[in-house]
Length: 336
Image 1 (tube, helix red, strand yellow):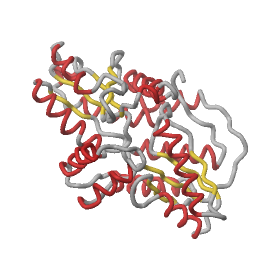
Image 2: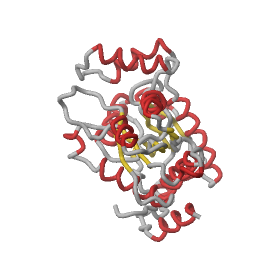
Image 3: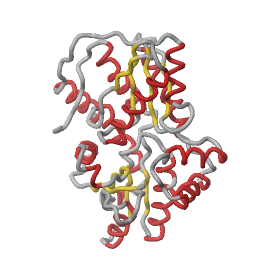
Image 4: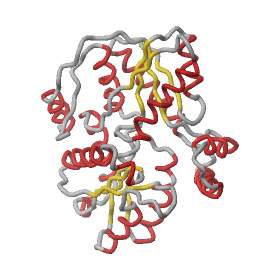
């Protein structure tokens, strides 16, 4: 029922778009991650290249990867997502090749754009694995795409990014179903009292003040919370880095867990709404650090899964493609 209401609301709020434009490929653009222990440090060095990050910090983050087997599941998950989208598009009658290119690790964007060029792709759409607007989640990806096109040289395909989707009804539906799965793991007698805590990657305040990242996140949290019948929810931040003197978005998820325990909570549902897949910052920062903190506090923590390859999320990506490929009206719900 919640899914039907969300989709109906999205259609009611839809606006007509311009004329149809031909595209001949879809490029899934993501962060990338190491897939074996010997790739961890080269990957991290690539991530921070030109940023003067102390080696001690790299070793600290490398230990997070080693704790999780010396690899990140992000590439595997994105390959599964790309395959699911390809199949879903085909069911809609769109035989569109789907490529996967990463910002920081193989398959690197530059190599993939050259592959697309060799395959004869001339005009592609790009789905960036970030639901929200920020420099690191949007503008940096645009810069990376243009750098990759420049590397490919003359004849490189044009690549146009699909819009952000924090308020797409199918995205919210997928999040809601993940929340409901997590709530089901809490005893029925205590379920209604369990606080709902959404999390997202913290960013420096200086960056947050120049974009709509926090605003869009709060709207997505509000929509998802309302869809599960909750008026109250919390938004916490995680995975911050950088010098302690630099202000970042707060409160941190660990501080929120402590405050909830002090207030008498016995259970908590943690929803990583800022992440699309269960990669290292979810597996280590939530499933290890936050879970350990909750256990020490006597809190039962049910961590909701990310949307991953949820069927509604896959169909949402197809909706975004159809907006550009077929002139289908865009869907959005909420106040933004």
